[in-house]
Length: 221
Image 1: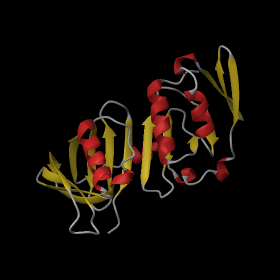
Image 2: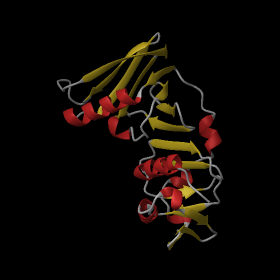
Image 3: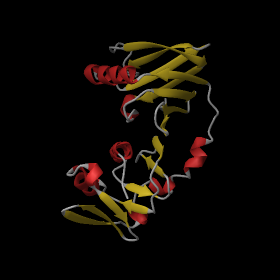
């Protein structure tokens, strides 16, 4: 079988959230951070059999050696074979019992059904990159989102230091919310997103172009 460039890039992103991979739904990739505060769900165009790797880096690194369009993948019962015209690499699956946290994930449909949000707004790829870069440059760990009647502010700051540097970004959308998150938990694939917020609980970042979303837990104050 073939794996598309989009699927592989999202798979690479998911392994940055959790180095382990466990594909147990035919047309879905899922991930869960070790701290259990980030969930990623992506509906794939490919149909997989079940497979799992405790350490995904050898698989990801081997695939990256070749042009993706030249690779044929054979996901067998015990191993995946990565084949090109002149090479063949076999990577054996790991016991799912040793894969941390991913076994705690429910079926993707459970996360898709969650609709109890207080507010929604759009966030462009450019805006997300600016927020992340500003947080890195200024050494700011926190991101708060406050909206009232569809108008609001995203504030990048250090909530433990009232005299810290800040960056503020105006947003427009629908509803009211007040939520704080860790900037480091915005480990999302680049792109434009629709963000839905359940105040004091979580934010759901839904990619505009791909059937991909992330659930990021609110910071516990």
